[in-house]
Amino acid sequence: MSLAIFLAIGAVAGWLAGVILKGGGFGLLVNIVIGILGAVVGGFAFGLLGISAGGILGSIITATVGAVLLLVIVGLLKKAA
Image 1 (cartoon, one colour):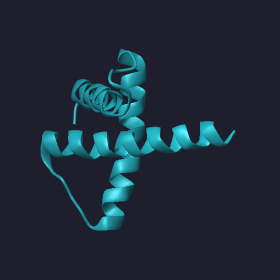
Image 2 (cartoon, helix red, strand yellow):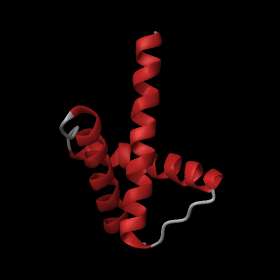
Image 3 (cartoon, one colour):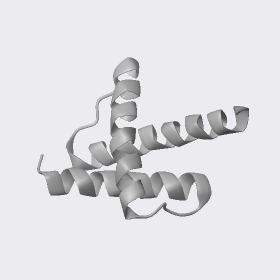
Image 4 (cartoon, helix red, strand yellow):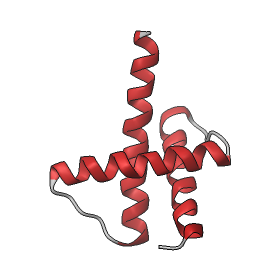
């Protein structure tokens, strides 16, 4: 996968996670970081569940689900601190 597509998927996934959880994105750079980390978390979670999603749309879904999980965990940790 080319770097441009990888970054675009990260940006879209991070933006979608921001919209789902807080009603808006976080800015391009933060959206990309959240999306990329979300792809790792989502890939791990989907792997545990035996789910595989292929193609660009599957990558966006996986990264978005992972980004939402990541943001929920971060939110819970911030409340506990």
